[in-house]
Image (cartoon, rainbow, N blue to C red; front, side):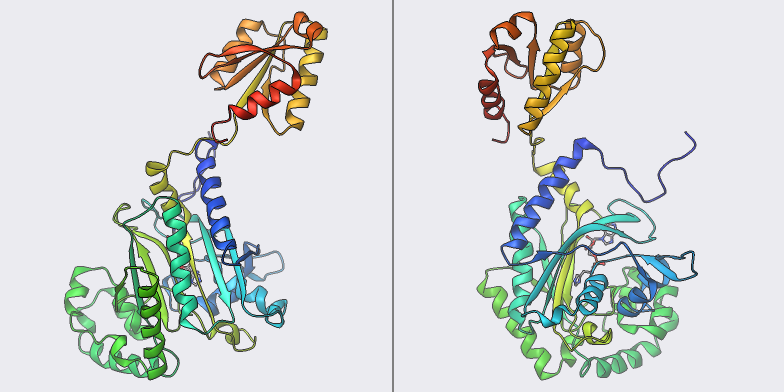
Length: 421
Ligand code: HAM
């Protein structure tokens, strides 16, 4: 075969798609009960949108963006995340004129040119939620609560919820200065990435996973000691809310996140079930982003869940069967029988029953063999006798039961034997 998948991309086959659909369905039900509404934004956007929102000096923008020129020479990008696009749509369509809060969710592919490894892909999928117009920390806590509710519905427990505050435009510059001074005489001991971060985005050194850097930065000043009163109160209220909701969490002052738009609350949900790529979901507040893009000053917060990582966990824990039974309509060879069989197939499909049949002349025996190989749950046989009596022979391939039934009885019987009914 001349062509194969690009590195870091995946085909998802029907055998696992039902799991994806189940997870998506569960996500929709959960977030819709918090009044989040679905939004679909394009996969390709003006590259500038991401450069400015995520930040020029972040790994995503510096190294991981799929950027190219379109035929008119415009610089466009495959979206590496969903928040920036939702913010763009919110401003472009003046959604701020609608009564607050405005809450949106999205499910779809994102693209980052990262080094692929287990749990890390170049095309991956996120379920994201973004809330606009609420400044109160109650929504920060509620987002975490919603996330937890969703993950528990998928039977995923034992997760670590970690929170931090990154301060605001008032207090963060002071912290940056302190951090810069602290790093100045250590910078030569740090890895190349950290040396670069030191110049451009010193907060990111906190994120470095290399043991040598961690060791040099043991006593690094932490942002939580530099929060202004408003940020401190916001962070405390968030903790009170989480306590009220009985969510156990840890404060991790080293969470800085790989995107520059965050203000105040940031959080990550991690698991020990995944190996190195252990973050299932992450998010936080971004109170300045709407204004940065020319909209009215609007507090906002959200999160995104990595679907591939979620599915990997669910594949081991959930036993979800495909929603519908497959019915195979077989017929005794003959023009009348074939016509009648095709009519029956159309009838059942009109009832939203999943039906397969033979598209070429084949003996009954080989049709039954085919039905078996396709994993049919129920086989119906159409022959001269059946047509005369308007009663069809059926057999449940899973439990061996068989009998004869009229059209209406057939529909009933198929629906009743559905695994998920
Ligand atoms: P993020 O932390 O960059 O945040 O991504 C969120 C989640 O997407 C991660 O926790 C991870 O599960 C998944 N993810 C990220 N990159 C990959 C990858 N290469 N392969 C597989 N999964 C991946 C955001 O994207 C923010 N937009 C979240 C947010 C929404 N903040 C506020 N609103």
